[in-house]
Length: 173
Image (cartoon, rainbow, N blue to C red; front, top):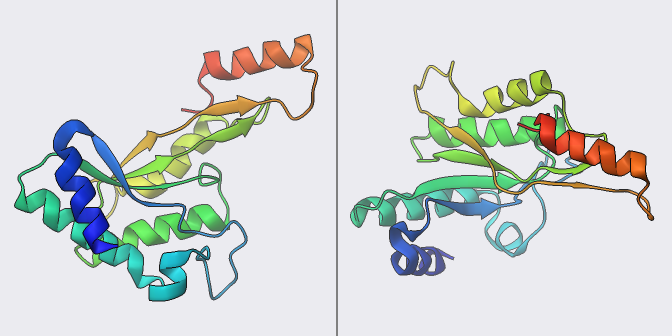
């Protein structure tokens, strides 16, 4: 894992503005004692793999004087809920441990008529950005993906209008 991280960063350098160091590490159905999704890294290293990955990425970026931003990226973390809370805890724990994390990527896979209200979206993003964090570590949010899909086919005219309005009004920002 560490070699892979190093080789990717050295290969792409600053051609990427931001890089998802860890993607989709959290479970959609966390338990009280385990928020993690099962994957090859979690299954073999445990949850510490996230910190290891960010530490290695930061080491390579800093050693090579690169400006690429290091992100945690996930889906279903745009609304209040257990997964969102766990993502905020993850960011907070990394920053508290002095581990560099520059941002959180929101994958934003929505359904027509089901985008979060602006106030909800901003409140959730505030939990990640740590603007009131006593550590003073700035963490930014970015929409890394965005789709507003129909849940049934064929798509009706009303659904198409709603989808257009969902994108146009920016309720997802």
